[in-house]
Image 1 (tube, one colour):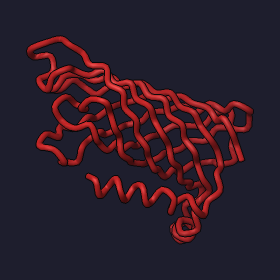
Image 2 (cartoon, helix red, strand yellow; image 1 turned 180 degrees about the horizontal axis):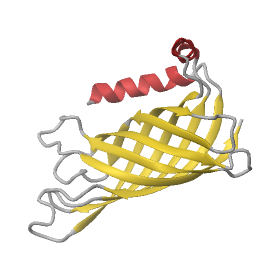
Image 3 (spheres, one colour; image 1 turned 90 degrees about the vertical axis):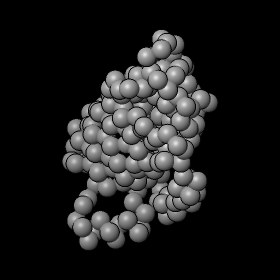
Length: 197
């Protein structure tokens, strides 16, 4: 787990060093994981995201694969998580914990019709997540948050384009502690572009 966090910290400057910033986005998202033995968790998240033109290394790869419209990005997210107070979910008590979490993520995004006014996209990314309490209860305060999202940019040429879609997140400590049930969270998100370069 610590090795993955170190690799993530080393990759961030390497991925973005040769790439110019492209856009700065702000997202709000909300969702939950399905009921399981450990109960039911709700996530509300605020995400600040910076996208970059492709680094030179990636440009060569995408030219060979003929995949235009690919970009990389980095984001920082703040999470408000409501989850069962106990590892046993609601079996013995109905207490809910309010947990604060922060995460960083590196991602790759593919956009179709990059010059159109409506631009569908899909992205894939991962990064470390820290929280002030264990998520889920009795597991770990350090997790990895891996995400896959689909969505679209609407009114792309306007001053305040609208970004909306669905994101699936898997929160897991990677087996770094004895307990690692993981959370599969389904989220809806909406956002806008705050700045273009």
